[in-house]
Image (cartoon, rainbow over all chains, first blue to last red):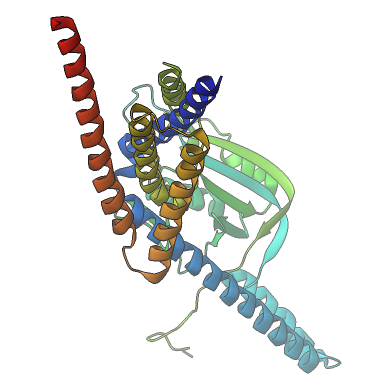
Length: 234
Length: 118
């Protein structure tokens, strides 16, 4: 009786041991984990820290923004000229992407198509995004964002190394891209329904989904804008 | 025999069960494996010496793992590679236990041979 009990306990522990060893073996031989596990844990920690910092800073930005709004309201109260100026200012902000905007429009979701050859991984190119943004602008989009990065007059969309950089934020070309555009949703959708449109041309590489929505929110351009060389002219 | 079946079940579980251990914890698995291996070798040795006690064995197994992981965590927190201590100690104990197991087995074999000759 005692012997069986001890054997069972040994068996239980061998079970745990076997599980851990195979798990670790699988982990170290899967492609993802070529990097040392210690490095990964360091990177995870760093990532968490930076995320926290980012959240804090964003909260601060929001706080200051609301202060600015309050001041603007207080200044423009009751005076017709300044009220008009305020309206003008808000319009210009939408144009330059400095305000969150919402309204009707479309959401385009792009993802690299699964290739028939198993080893080859399709990807999305910066030029695809540029073409789509161009098409949206041609169809009268009033505000565009890609993966929550507002498209402004100074937005760059380019490949940088293994990434696609949009507003200096890096995105993996193997990931999903979500393009939101505000405008007449029928016209916007129509631009991607015409025969031979850019999405159709590339449908072997990119799988896409277009949704119409009446309630699209597009965030504002969140980076600092500085002008070093351009001065207002006459 | 039963322990071997347990080991095989464990290996199969490890292959087919899709459990995701969070990335921040993966650094502790190797140390835990070493601690577990040490306990198992210790258990085999004890059973060969006929001193095996399942309570001691199980408590030793878990406390070894917990201590090893705790040391590794402390080392990570202090930025000192204390896990090396666990690796070295468990490693040397592994070799010690293995040497003793080998000796016991050899002795048993010799006694059997003698019994056959006579």
